[in-house]
Image (cartoon, rainbow, N blue to C red):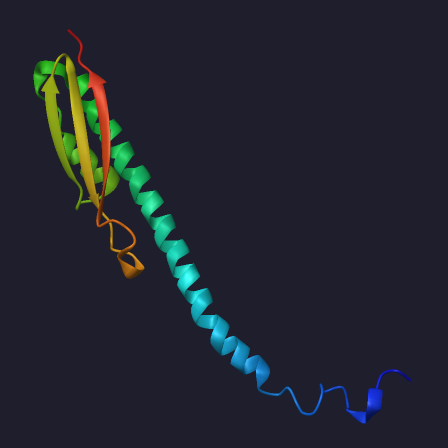
Length: 127
């Protein structure tokens, strides 16, 4: 008895709602796409940052284990872990070795994310 109030046919007051779902979808879709793009870009940045830091740790470990024999290949270790575009620089002094890696990151939407990330590790040299 209450299902059809006033003979309006359940379609709202004064007309049909046929195009409102399409209009709402057209308004919401770009916002959802931007948010998902930012989310995926941020996740990519976190993964690259973790790989870059792990590459720095592994390169420092390689230099400490090799010691003064000179058999270490920190660039090869970094390339295997962080990818071929990663660069490495080392500094030795005060009984320790510092390894800095720089890993490229594709720029995110609107330039929010950095172009490259850095990882740094310090290892104590054996005497």
